[in-house]
Amino acid sequence: MGAEDASAVRRRPGRRPGSADTRGQILTAARQIFAEKGFDRATVRGIARTAGVDPALVHHYFTSKAGMFVAVMDLPLNPEEVVPVLIGGPREEVGERIVRFVLTLTADAEARQPLLAMIRTAMTNDQVAAMVREFLTEELLDRAARGLGVPRIRMEAAFSQMFGLLVMRHVLRLDPLASAGVEELVALFAPTIQRYLDED
Amino acid sequence: MGAEDASAVRRRPGRRPGSADTRGQILTAARQIFAEKGFDRATVRGIARTAGVDPALVHHYFTSKAGMFVAVMDLPLNPEEVVPVLIGGPREEVGERIVRFVLTLTADAEARQPLLAMIRTAMTNDQVAAMVREFLTEELLDRAARGLGVPRIRMEAAFSQMFGLLVMRHVLRLDPLASAGVEELVALFAPTIQRYLDED
Image 1 (tube, rainbow over the protein chains, first blue to last red):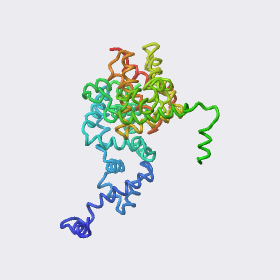
Image 2: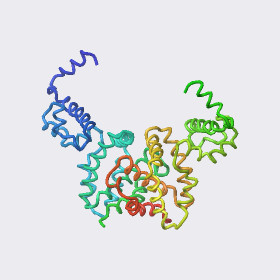
Image 3: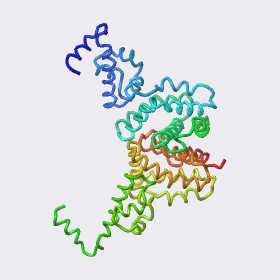
Image 4: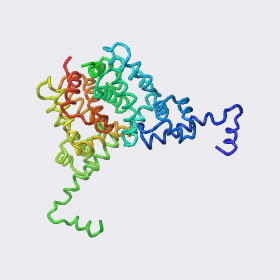
């Protein structure tokens, strides 16, 4: 972009000064702070300070630290919103709900690609792995294990099966797993998830 | 290494001419042919031709195409040898045998590292993914599914669970899954594998 174009953008009529950039500034700061400190030790206050904005603005744009992580990673969902839906409803169908939800979500390439990108990066970069581990533990696994009243190792077992299924279906592309329909896979995998998440 | 050292190596007394290099030449050729053609379309004959040796020598050093792949990838085991042991024995304990074997094998960092390296490369490189998929399908999944008389999708389901467990335990390192003892994990995961591999 030439100097004149940049200047034109800055002078765009009717634009509230700095507003579009504020979200971007916060995201840039969040990316930096998550990379430096990981997810656990990052704070909304610290990210706001790095971005040079008021913490209230961070809450305005992203609601929470998890919301910022979701935006930084371009994830198709926020566990804060999805977990209550998945663990609500009849307890004896929680396995089926989870398998059907994950398979339906990831059938869409636009939702799947950022998830696979995060998985690939976490598997080859220890710093990203630590950040993803902290995010998953706090926002997904702890939240769901508490909500269902199961030990966290059982929630991790369920997660490990869904993770393995997604990698076999969409990365390694093992057939017939890769080309099977959602309902066939629900029948095959839901009892596994249900058993892990059943009360003792 | 200086010219004199190299020359000393070449003149090492008592060494059968070319013998140590032959194995290395075959491995180099195998690496090249697997990369170019994948596992399925590679042949012992083609690799021997590229290495400039007789196919009988390839069989002498590596037994089979699978043996060459295992050597190229530095894998800690050959499915040709392990599958019969795992699917033999009481059918109602096959899940337990598989989970205990995989966890015990991968508890050893020297056995685990090449497996994890292969997984990481396959997840970020489509050509390697195809090669690994072909090797796994032919040498591990087909062989085990045939041996047990189960549909291959059920063997892939079992594989997806063991894969997910290994990644969570040794790459993402989710606790308590990462620090749990082998027997606790056998109790948690063996029923899953057993159900996938039970006859209908």
